[in-house]
Image (tube, helix red, strand yellow):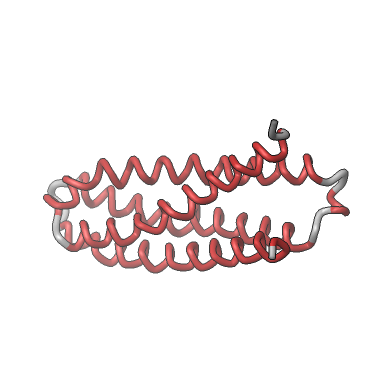
Length: 153
């Protein structure tokens, strides 16, 4: 019978894999759809928006399950390994990038899409920025994975 810590680890890994994995496809799908015009973007918009919602939920579950694992495995923060604090800091940096850069660029794309009078080509620079900033998020996600696996080998 698995302990609650083992179940929490499984939930944490599944949420993290969903967050990191699904988020990898969003920038390229968005950029490609924007570059192909309003009609193509309209066809794939629902799927992209649904994926973005799943990514958001998975990111919150990852953060919460990570905190719960810290409290379940260690009696105090002073016993927590430094690599976990570094990973937590990087994860918070990812959230900061998401809410200050990625999300606003996505919202600009949506505003241009929803305004039928607006030239949809104006969304291309925002899609490229979204793509570029998401690359930084993915880099930092990879660094977190390295830190989390550091002691596993």
